[in-house]
Length: 392
Image 1 (cartoon, rainbow, N blue to C red):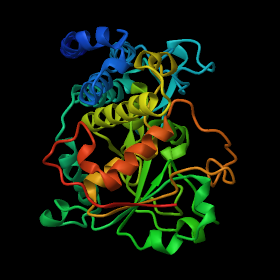
Image 2 (tube, rainbow, N blue to C red):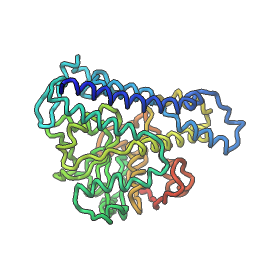
Image 3 (tube, rainbow, N blue to C red):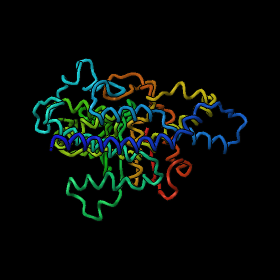
Image 4 (cartoon, rainbow, N blue to C red):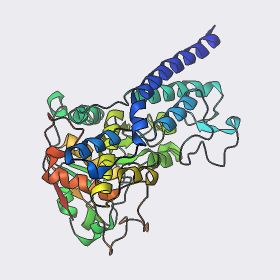
């Protein structure tokens, strides 16, 4: 009897997920058709143009692809998944039977073996719970303290009930731009209560410029995936501080498998950004990209789409800044920007920016956070923006 219950349980999960996804596609269908209409921006008033850009920014370019990936993953199809390489979709793996994973005990197992089934259930539960939250909520910024600080304090056993509900007094978001090496802000960075670093950027050897303190590591799931391939899922860049909290946003649904495997082995269990927060960041960066495309690049709206496919995405830095805005009373931003004399990343030899990000549009958002936060769209009027300062 037990062998018959498992397939039935799996089918029920699939039915629930399919209904949820179908409803979302139906609701957004009208926006998808609107996206490809030719829009004459020169005959529009400023208010009408702004409303048009808001409507376009609400269209999810990659929803169909995500839906297909998630449906296949929920069915147990881990082959050829992901829009970038993963350890399950690389050329090293030919068939489903050849896939090897670590179990929660670190024992190599076959994906079809009975040992994998509990992990698969955990993976599907995590994936489904995250996707179910993929909806727009303008009040999500006000919930970030509960979504991020509370689980961190619970792990550290450091915050009482009252402390956990408060914002951090000050936060430094340290980007990875080479311009950091043009200043010596290390002590200033370390003076903040919360220091957020991005994608495991090194501090050793650069302390005079970037500081040495790290209280939160913000990474994308591609970075976490590379950690999952190591023994013990080691993802520690900041000395022996195994308990530095990790906040991670999901780049590809299949990376929930990395999370499911490594969640119990990492010193501080990673906190995955809420899908509602991800969606807010997506809309923000798309709105500012459209706005810049029309007003600064001087091109019509219908030309934006061909140059920004389903891979278009906000940067890790952008979401880290918005996270700090939600959980901190004061935000200082370091290492964001570029210079002809500086490397793209201070700690690597990367020379070019990634084409899937619109950094200039993100800089426009940062300037609005400083000077005109009330003009930033999609965020509830009830949210109180903290002061933001950018150090160049």
